[in-house]
Image (cartoon, rainbow, N blue to C red; front, side, top):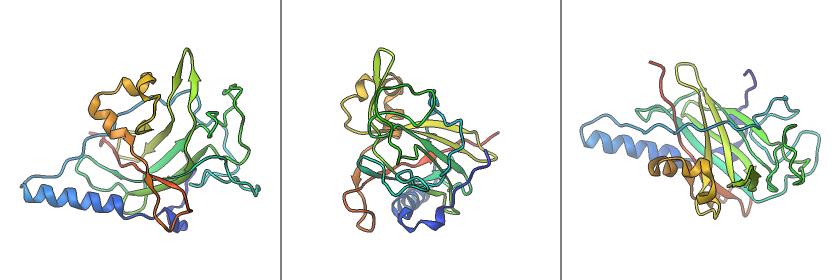
Length: 226
């Protein structure tokens, strides 16, 4: 992959929450006389809808498409976090990609033949490089659920994180309190601890974001290559 985003050019992607949590974790470990440790984020399948065609718009704002005046349908969601190593240190210059269904539960992908409507204003995929502090951010919408075989996929967002010196990670982020979570085989297939690591409670987004938006704070831990 050679496509890259630019984290610093969008001020609304800045949030001190993840940095504060990381600093507090480090201080606590120091008081206890040991090195801080972060548990690895569990890997999951990429699924069948990883983007195969390079889009016209490839930034961290999935709610608008270049050349279009419209905005994606759905409830606005900011996804922010920090990419860390197993010692809770920030990982700079990591490539973070996300892809997801639109609010109706359909992917912007040639293999998705769902009868659910496409959203011409929804980008469907985005990427960004983490900053020196390991932080990343995206603006998107809360995805819809969709059928998968005889079952249903609960709302989720796919992630791919890559950085030289670390194992590539493909995972999925889920939303706390979704009725379909217990019916989703990929979510229930995780251990209780791993489910907690990738299931995020939505919060009101900070006042400097768009009114009514929600915030998902999702930190990601990479494993170093031995």
